[in-house]
Length: 334
Image (tube, rainbow, N blue to C red):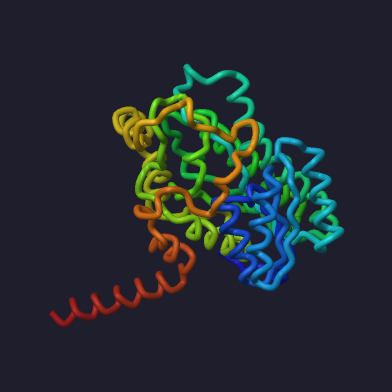
């Protein structure tokens, strides 16, 4: 059974809000009238994103912060409560990845991806709960991925982090149920998205990486995040590719190991890359590339029929039952 939240969403915090999915989500919440706190590392990019949010007639608070710093995240949460008001929704979206065979990763690189992509969500959740528990309400949205269920080659650190987020979120959810808390924690499992990460992620492969097609626009992810924040769904799978990957892995994990070994090196290859001229954002943000969309507008889908069906289950079920009744009636006549 699925319920809508009872309280209006007035204040939203989004990590990784300077570009990609985070920026798209900030704008989506702003269009619905919510004030938005935007957290990320690059102050100039945050200021630009906050300006876009304010164009919708709401307040925006830009807070430069690295989500791997737990104390800094705590301070950011305090600042949001003081300047914007009680936090209704906290969206953990910040991430890093390295495109590389595991054999070429350094321990420092693996740790950095883990600290931001996994611990950043842990620290964000801790900070949100410190304030939400006092009111016994609020929603935490973990931005996940189909890769939280089905890992792929060349992104072992990222896949491991997303698996970790799913594990700790499941544990936390059970604890909140035990405490009879009204705080809701949900995870949104994303497909391949057209974000700037493929232009600035660190890489040890000798070509420019790309998302594994089919590719969706960040606005598809943003709509899913906003919907998840307003409804009490445990998890939301975004797009048919996510659904296929997650379901297939439940039944045929060994077959997928073999398939991905044969196909996913090439599927993540874009074009020849000159490593000496490419900057990356692993240790510091890359200026000038903070946009909502990445480099794949010509290939990215702006809508997902599977997401619409997942978020309109009563309509889909009702239509299915009506169609079944019509078919049954037609068969009886014959």
